[in-house]
Image 1 (cartoon, rainbow, N blue to C red):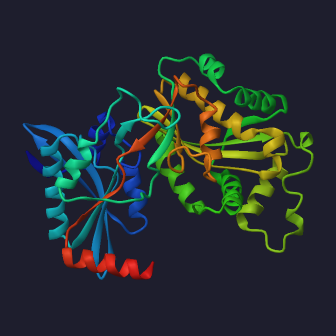
Image 2: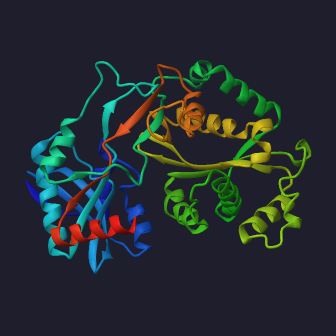
Length: 387
């Protein structure tokens, strides 16, 4: 086996065929990271002229001039293969060490164990726990948390029609969808110049639910990088203004300092009063799946108009019609636990599925590989003190 560097398009060709592919492992995400000061690299393992593994890796000075090497959504390799895992990680460590690195961080899009719709381990299902041993033997340390969700909820749509999926949904979910349609809620895709509408709703949602929203520039860059490739959609659910009990923007006039995002959304509403934004969603369309990545809803209209349900149903139908194999509702906060404050997120997503079509996915999680032991231990110590 040989550890080699790849050109971006060489890597893309391999990644698109990999069973472990992720939109995080694309030249587009490399460009997004490059815009934030990271340097992208593409590595592969080749044997007899055939690529066996590959990864997009980005590097950035992070601690006392030493660099972190990071593979978001990667590497793309079979971690059940001990020899391949050990060879790839040994050579990546060697490269990082010779190029001023002190740590390698990976977050593979690699499922660990098969679970059912309720989060229980599926009897007779796959179990790739040998992968954890192989990573440990290669010198990697498993982290308790990841930047990306370790657990997600997925709707399997392969072999199912939209009608079958709708019939199998939870009764309340079907009723919410029908109610939204009856209330006149419509779905349309946002253009780039309308992303201020998207940002306004996600920002208000993040403030309400206490999570950090992405800046408008992130959404604009994702649009620029992926939309032309047909791999991202920014969707909006809205209703005619005369159908609403009060305008979404009734309180804006009383605000002392409306943000540019809010002002842009208000101007859009005044110019096109046919639909007032109620809910928005950002969806990645990559490989075999549609991924529900980010979203937000106007709290004033959530219960009465159920737009958040209709926008999901619209994209599920899109996934079926365009031959995707699964619809990924993305992250849930840990395994299902009714006592958790975030249980409602899981319950909302589960409502679109049945025991046959829905399941919880568990990824292998984030791991780190110490490269420069002195700098690594010093960084961990200082981080612990700071925390």
